[in-house]
Length: 273
Image (cartoon, rainbow, N blue to C red; front, side, top):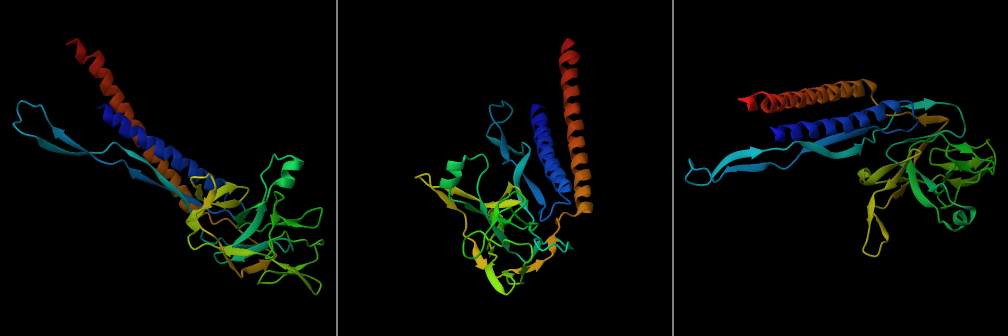
């Protein structure tokens, strides 16, 4: 009976986590460049139940397998392209295909000396709702510099500029730089970091040095100026997932209440006899 309580509890915990994922998708349905997440679950390894030390059984006998519930397997991101929305702003860029814009990321909370010594790390984004900062650089809404093919931030200096489909940034007739676009053979190595940025999932080696799971490949991006990529969240699908998750959670809650009532009867009523 207690095993049944544990099994139903694991299901409730998994469905609660799934509801968090669905809610986050619905919350970001209007977020530029957002990619929906999907959570999968997996059952725990089955246990083989056997009858031993039973006087009625003369030899070891297998009863059958027993499963102890489910747990979260993984949360993966769906990188399907969202629809393009026209804004007619020169700083808004949409990227067709499977590429990512590259951003020079610096963590927040650093002192001026620390910022000077910190070597910016690469982060990747599909959100092209950029802006020109006070110094004339092309930046994300959070102030991170958009990287050019030169490896340096793109200094434009004016809002009167043109971005060609291949990423060439032109001010008048002069090409300032090319917007760097990369792709990943396996995009599942990317992990959401916040601020619509992705980092490469990796690990540290025995010396404590970070080893990325993959290296990006530079490509020529198909860039549309004056457009942004909308979220790829399917509202109808997410609402169906929400109802399914809620019903599953409710059913397992009823199972727990049933076991709880059975234990109450066993302790308070049957024990009297």
